[in-house]
Image (cartoon, rainbow, N blue to C red; front, top):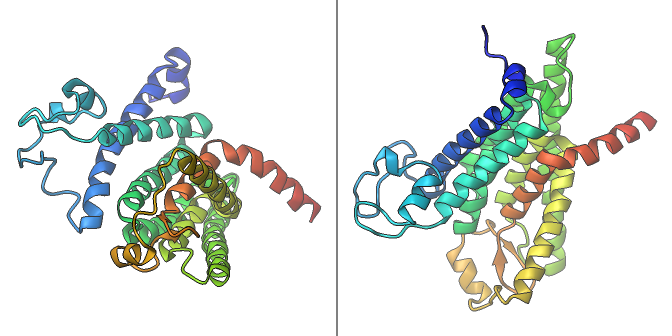
Length: 304
């Protein structure tokens, strides 16, 4: 008897969601390695996971989420504390994978999970270093076009009855989404730079939007840009109210520490990475936003 997802879901409705969450948490554990090592120029394969004291981490101490809870955030070998963020990234990735599985068909879900992995890695690297590596943006965009051609449903195209035609249209939609996503945010950045008379948008964000547009199409790209602006506005308002935004460093000092063009500057002088805002908006579109946007776009296209 073959592996029948529909049968398993009907008989054991908890099974596939559990598997997807666990798989996502495992990917999140790997993403923790990517987040730390890629900006440092280190291999993501070797050496294996090890404690800050240099001791290799045993497999039973490397179980996503559970190990952090069981060990209470301290290494078994030397008792050194390690950040809750490791468990947070694992749990977050698992939950996002689960949301993607619930929202889409299995094939589209797999494609969405790849996007989620890239979004999570880019978000935390940007928060730590105010950069989004080309290994994520450029290669991710190339992969997105290939995935779109292989999974036409990612861009809403039916692979039947002529699979090749659906693949061509979906691949073209990915390229169009990348061009529109990166192009729109580039022009927004140039306009803001002309008004503010200083760098307002990092080129890393432009390439990041190319990646997002390639996965989500031009509709998702537009949603992400404006959704990201709304998320950023909300975050900045909340952070200002609770006093978390400080200007204890001058803009000149911040520029000296940050590669040129890799961070978004706020008018008050503090630098805030825009990548996480875009990632949040893209995740919202992937999980639920497409249900709001696509019917309106379809109606408009019918008129034209």
